[in-house]
Length: 171
Image (tube, rainbow, N blue to C red; front, top):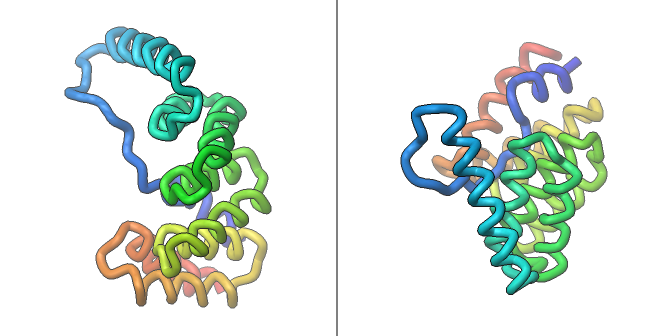
């Protein structure tokens, strides 16, 4: 019951990385053209340097936005294999894994983030959402409280605060 509430609320795993780009095109066709050309350019750059983590991350974000979760996951896994200490990459991989229904992999990515950056509020929020999805509301409440305590004004802390409020109405 809570899982639907959290997941249905519009993307429950937090992604710190933002899509790059300049001003927004005014027409859908020009946006598609820009994305297509950006992908071609990035793919060429990746052929020259197949371990360039920022390019892999951007390609993964583009694949995800197009609904190609497998392609996104492949790019992100390649980025993690190149540099396993990239918090943004691991958060994004956790998000993609959760969207694919692989909550065990999503949990592992968020735990890896916490090993790299203890107390990282987005990862704590994400773990709480995974616990809530499994029906473990005690654990969800615990990690969301930790996210709020340590997160100050971060998105993860704000999401955790809202999730705790929703959890009170569910139970």
